[in-house]
Image (cartoon, rainbow, N blue to C red; front, side, top):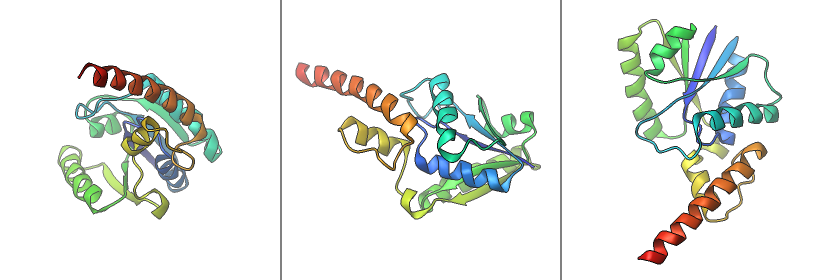
Length: 173
């Protein structure tokens, strides 16, 4: 059975990787789907995010049944297009569940043949998000155990530019 795991992955975190690794054991094929979300401003472009995901798969042994694609539009339509029977979502907290339940219900209305599978985050990742990682990087914090080593350098570089831009703006106020 083919599943897809959609997200912005801006950047991919160790929590995302854990979901990918676990999903790769549950499904015959897992497509990590780099998506555009109009509610989010991404730090990395879609090609950079795709490459970071591909590079990060090394840290979980490069599962042979995992591929990475860039998609746009409705996730459920993309899932249908690639023949995925399941959309995977990670759940960290009740707030994630409430949001994801609404998304899953909408997807069910649009494509009743596609299921949504929720994978619960491991406790050590229950607080972790790409936004948290960006904030930690912006303030010079330690990213150890938060993002794959392949992501740490590019994230710190991008956030150093953001920090410089913030200093320039703050200097003008």
